[in-house]
Length: 121
View 1 (cartoon, rainbow, N blue to C red):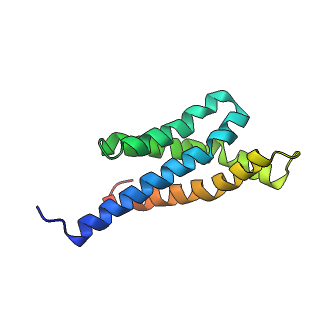
View 2: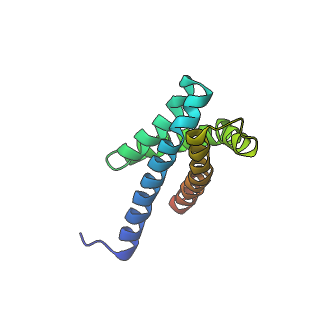
């Protein structure tokens, strides 16, 4: 089977989504740990989903979707509040919140675009 340009483009897009999801998950580990230890499940779901999406694409996509949506709803507003009103010299927390504020919306947008291109969201 010869790979056409569409197939290569789709594979490249999926690989970029996996890298973006892993980066967003790593950036969100520290803010989740700052809220509570139990929130660490969400970025771990995002990282594991990105890692296993190559072998098990459906399970990986569901883990990335679930992790990204929970992080967007629960942790992203907290990161924005930390950036708006820093409580002190929390250098690592502020830099992690900045990275989270950049990576998470990009990850959400890429997952939505991928879902629309697949024909189901």
